[in-house]
Amino acid sequence: MKKIILILLCIFFTSNVLSQEEKPESVKNNMVKLNVLPLTFGSISADYERVISSKTTIGLNLTLMPKRKTPMLGIFESLIDDEAATNQFKNAKIGTFSVSPQVRFYLGKSAYRGFYVAPFLRYASHSLEIPVEYIYENQEESVVIDGSINAFSGGIALGAQWQLSEKIYLDWTIVGPLYGGHKGTLSGQKNLNPEEVHEIEQALNDFEGLPFVDYTHEVNDNGVIVDTKGGWAGLRIGLAVGYRF
Image (tube, rainbow, N blue to C red; front, side):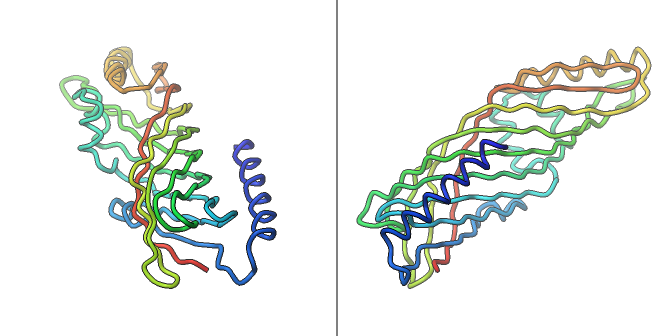
């Protein structure tokens, strides 16, 4: 997190210096945007973008999704392609907060218009709540594990932006693959007997179907602890409406 703060301070200090040197005060160098695609699954994603030279901008994205059932579970299932693993996530809940600084290089005549290439970083904190289901005495039981997973990643986005009116813009992030690493701990307390401990151990083995994940777990008569780390991959897309000022 300290690295992100230092990066943001450097970016915005540089932007202030360059904008004062190269841009008259009458030029509208700032833009705020709302990404409409995340709204469809209960997430809020907003951007700030600022011109620092004739074809370059810097920006910051903030995304917030309150804890809720796993969005787009069908896509999640197709990516994992492991029925036992996805069954454990059917009643899971996830919440997300992320911050993503970026630099945009516009390929047209000026900033804010036309196609762009945008290297970016992302820090994300995901809060998870997962009922681990198991069978005990011919009945379905579960122990709820919860905690957070923190991920740090980077990528490059490709997109295009159009001016719709004097102050209104449309920004289409076509594709933005990202890759990095993650680390987190999930835990749940429940009084367990030896047979339940064995059944939960078997249920947790289903998580071996998850890609990029290296995890360890401990199950005892007091409950469950799961530590996870490994790679982190994703895809950034968006369709945002912007206001320039």
